[in-house]
Length: 187
Image (cartoon, rainbow, N blue to C red; front, side, top):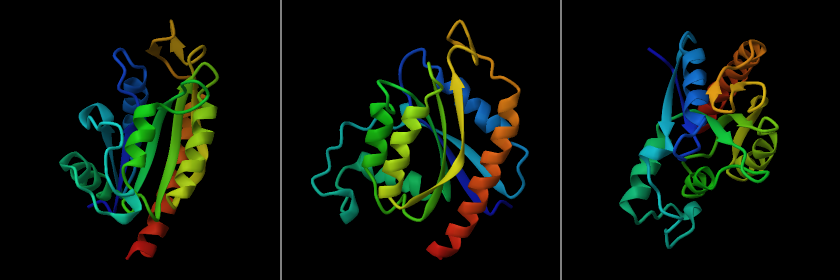
C-alpha cells in the first residue's frame, strides 16, 4: 500500500504536443518507487474554460461542476509534478488556468517541475515557482529541463539524454520527502 499519491500534471493540450511523451517518461521512471503512486493527469481530459468562477478560489465556493470535479481530483494528491512547455518565456495558458481554478486543494503540498522547450523550458519553471509559492505549495530545487534541440529528434520525437535519469531520481527523492513531511502538516 502506498502512503503517497503524486500527480504528474501534463500542462499542454496542443495537437501533436511533445509533452505527452515527456509526461509518460516521468511516469515510467517513477514506476519502481516504493511507497508512492504516480499518476498522469492530462489537462486534455479536464477541459476547463477560462476561469469562470464568481468567487476567488481562496473562498472555496466553487459553483461550476467542472470546477468541483477538478477540485475533487486535485485534492486526492499529496504532491505534483508539473510538466510544462515553454511558450513565450512562460508556462502554457492551459496549465496556468488549471492551477488558478483552485486554492485550498494545492495548499501545504509539494511540487516539482519538468519542462521542455528551445532552452529547456527553464523560464516556464521560474514562473511556476512564483505561482506555487503563492498557493502555499513547497517546490523542490531539482528540476528537469529537456531541450527541443538535444532531447528530441527532429524537434518532435522524445529521446532524452541519459544524464536525465539521475536528475529524475533526485527529483523524485526530494519531492517524496517534502510530500511526506507536508502530509503531517495537513493532518
